Image (cartoon, rainbow, N blue to C red):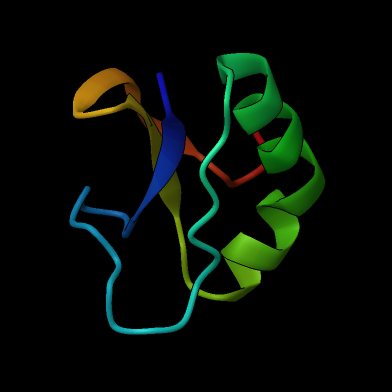
Length: 68
């Protein structure tokens, strides 16, 4: 299993027009820990929300990076 984040705009479209980290993680916990450390930088780069993928399967989607 390989886990990765898909970076999305506010409408849920994938953000592909700028250089963003393309990390791959061995576990869901590793991916979530990484996001916890890097979400502010992603938000500043124009990412509004993320989806977590395990290979091609979406674990969850539409998770906002904006603080509530």
